[in-house]
Structure formats: C-alpha cells, structure tokens
Length: 247
Image (tube, rainbow, N blue to C red; front, side, top):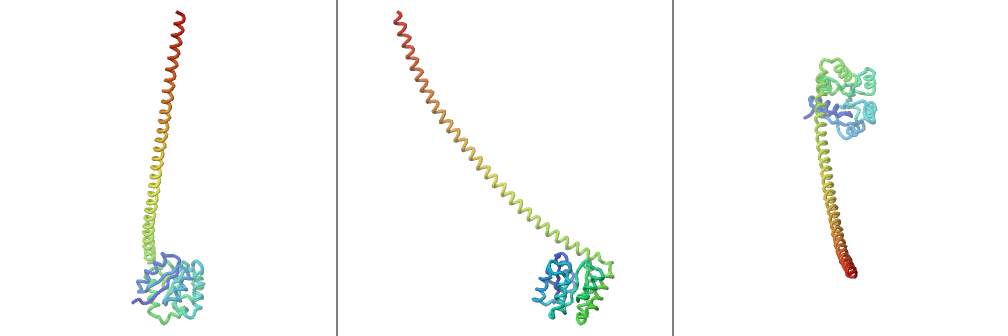
C-alpha cells in the first residue's frame, strides 16, 4: 500500500511525469493537473498528503493558489512545496510567508528529493511546522550540485519518450495525409477517365454527323451528275438537229 498520495499542479506534462516517477520511488502515488483551478477542485474531492505547486500557471498562479489552500481550514494542514525553476532567496522567503513547506527546483537531484520526502513522511508530526520543513527542503536541495546530472538525465528520458510519441503521432498523421492524397488522386483519375470517355463519345458523335453530312452530299452530287448527264444529252440532240438542217 502506498505511503501517501500527492497532487502535482504544473502546466508542463514533462515536469508532471518526471516528478510522478520520482514520487513512485518513494512509494507515493500521485495525480497531476495543469491549472491551479483544477488542483483546487481535486483537493476538495480527494485526500492528498503532499502538494507540489508550480508558480507560473495559466489563470491563477502558484502563490495565489497557495494562499487559497492555506486559508481553507480543511486544506491548510497539507504541506505545499513550490515546484518551480525560481530559486532566488527572496522567492523562498515569499513562499515561506505564504505558508509553503519549501521550494523545490525542477532540476533537482532525484535522490535528494527522495531524501526530503522521506524526512517529511517519517516525521508526520512535524508537518505543520513549516519553518522546520522549509529548512529540510531548502538546505538539502540547494547545497547539492554533484548529482544534478541524474535529474537532467531523467528529463532527457521523458523528453525522449515524448518525442517518440510525437513521432508516432506524426507518422500516423502522415499516413492519414498520404491516404487522403491517394484518395484525391483516385478521384482525379476517375474524373479524367470520365472526361476521356466523354471526349471520345463526343468525337464519335461528330464523326457520325460528319458521315451523315457526307452521305447527304453524295446524294446531292449524284443528283447533280444525273442532271448534267441529261443536259449533255439535250445539248447533243440540239447539235445533231443543227447539222441535219445544214445538210
């Protein structure tokens, strides 16, 4: 059975996946949402033991959501970690004043994050003591730089998986586009075939009409030839009469 259930509020799917996998190693289940508004709805629907809250979010930002959580008697006991790329000391102080349990950087070493979570889960009685928790999280995170490569490798791993998924979707889109293109080509071929058949039929009609016209012309020519023959006979008869009279 899981040791706890965490809510991850971050508009980056990559960041949510990375943190969720790290929490699995601490035997924590998690659920992710992309906005603070969705996170507040989840908090009122389900029970969570930890909250990881990004600062820059669409709509309500992280600090605004933190203030809403700490003002709610049913939610204020849940430790909230600002899960952000901001690391300035002033930001940490502002987060602490608003009730955050700590600030966790997104390039954190996974082993140190697990150590921080273990410290919180193993001493549940200290959860309401925000300054103590903040010291645990802040000091453990800020003082370690030797293993950041591990966290970055995790980022690359997730980025690779997302790229693989995007390539798969791209291949599917290209296959669909190719099928649509082939369908359009087939339609154009069929249209051209019909046009060719229509052209052949039209040409055949023209040839037929021309043949009929030629036949009519032949009849006319035959009639003219007959009339010319009669006229020649008449002329020949007249010539013969003239010669007879002269004799």
